[in-house]
Image 1 (cartoon, rainbow over the protein chains, first blue to last red):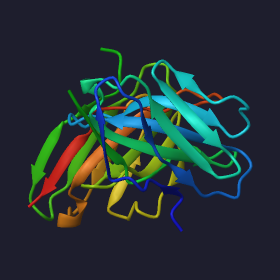
Image 2: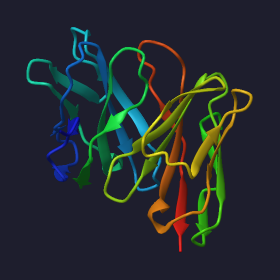
Image 3: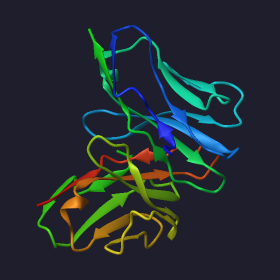
Image 4: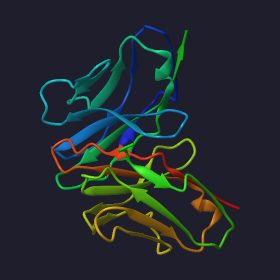
Length: 115
Length: 114
């Protein structure tokens, strides 16, 4: 079974609009962390936001927020006020268990922001 | 620039040759990771170091792959007897121990095996 599922291969949004990128995960661990990364065409993975499984509040970092619904095992990324520079691939990732460090990534969603 | 650096950025080699990649992590980071990314996929974990100790290895890391971090600073990833299936982007990341332990990635080394 896929650990991380991103069902949207591509998303389009107009500049200044908000967009939600979906991510669902599968784990039986109680302790885990969820991450979102941005990968522009240059190839470098840029860390955006983190949510711990025990965090009660949804994480926010500037224009990025994470809509964490633990019971549904979803961790959707919300980008507010989209900018042209937000056009990129976006990956959801999970680190599961205590003491394990590897990240498991989804297949990504390509976001295109139009003027 | 104080981010993660990787060298070379691109490598073209012929099947059967050996290649070695280098990663320099963010200086105060004690953890270092190697991932591989093929076209249309997310990165896949290969291996992880805490200081100089290699603590996790993926089953993806065949006997032809070896990674070292001799002094707990930079790391090398060597692929022996390269195969066309090794063509991919090899990403290095580093992190500092902690609750969040977010990993910061380098620009990657793109390997093409002819």
